[in-house]
Length: 91
Image (cartoon, rainbow, N blue to C red):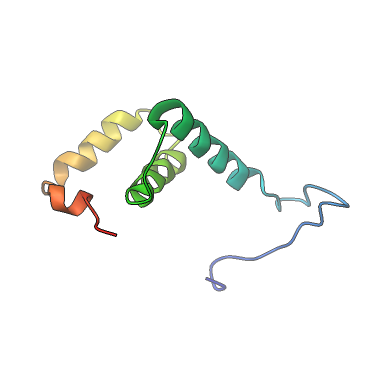
C-alpha cells in the first residue's frame, strides 16, 4: 500500500484541511452508509454486513456515473449467474 498511497496526518487542533489532505471523503462515505442503513435497510446482520459495505462502496465509487443502473445491469448480464450459496455466508 505504501507504494500507491501516501499517508498523511491532519492536526485538527490547528486545521481541518491542508491542501488536498483531509478526511471529508471518508466522512462522506460513512454518512451515506449510515443513512442508507437507517433509511432503507433499517437493520443489517453481522453475517451480511460485508455485502452491504460492498454495495455502498460500489455506489460511492461510481457516484458520478451518468446512468448507474444501466451500467450495473450491463455488468450483471455479462457475468455468470450468482448462486444463493455464495450470498449466504456462514459465520
